Length: 161
Image (cartoon, rainbow, N blue to C red; front, side):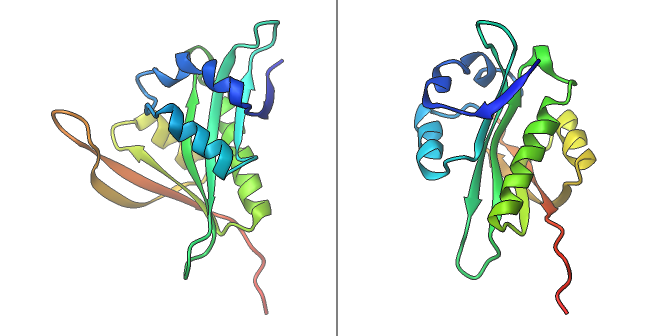
């Protein structure tokens, strides 16, 4: 049975096979370390059963509180190994992060994604995320940059009378 748990520092050295997947944005070790320090409790890893505990997928999130803006959660990185896609792991990881963001008081959760990643777009819209805006040439690919969609899902709150 798959287990989900908070990521630990030593997991960073076990997720290389996931990081170098073609559909995954590649970030530096510094990026991940900053998330551990700046946003504790907002990362999860899905681990396969067995003694080796092979990483199946992960999510790194942020909780942002900016002046004159509602607080929000931001999905900085989400990936699932090609061997474990279409099993509901990405949904479980996204649901976890949405729930934690809600408990922290977020008004919404957002993410940025490549416009060419149709499978991701279908996943996120099925989870209730909606296209908010497009950022042209967001990803600095060579020789041609790629644009990004910002998707958002608002946290339902009771109406105050």
